[in-house]
Image (tube, rainbow, N blue to C red; front, side, top):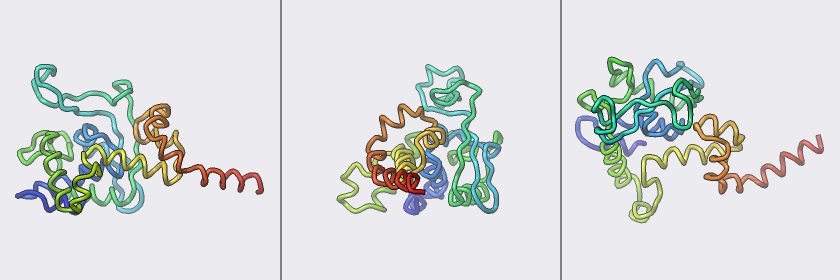
Length: 208
């Protein structure tokens, strides 16, 4: 995250650091993070906050959108158009978002993340910044590896972290916007690593 802030001129990377933070600390999909508005956020001065995720702006071919825009608003993936996903966020992300809003403001519609010209952040723009940040932060061996190769990998890292921390699969699935079935299939390796922890918890319950 720190390396991202050193990328580009005119604060290009610094403008996007909080976007990447949303993917890592809240497991947002890039399209969900891009669509985030100030009114979707509860950002207290202290403690945990909350994001209400109810819209996504995936990047698509302009000939397939109603507006001709490369980004079209859609409902959440695998959910109805009016569904809302509440995502608790840790104090570190609350602090990052508060700082971002204080420095860069928000768009007329409340959008937190905008391009330098005020438009929707393009996937090519944030991917270029991320690739440049990897060159600054990683060793040559790490750069050549799959480690954090794509911005979307930040979301995978978040979900893996939650599972490895012992958060229940249904709770992780709800926060990430997955079905439990998909979560168990995609992140089975993380769950496999929890066997000893689960055994100890069962033993503690049996001997209580």
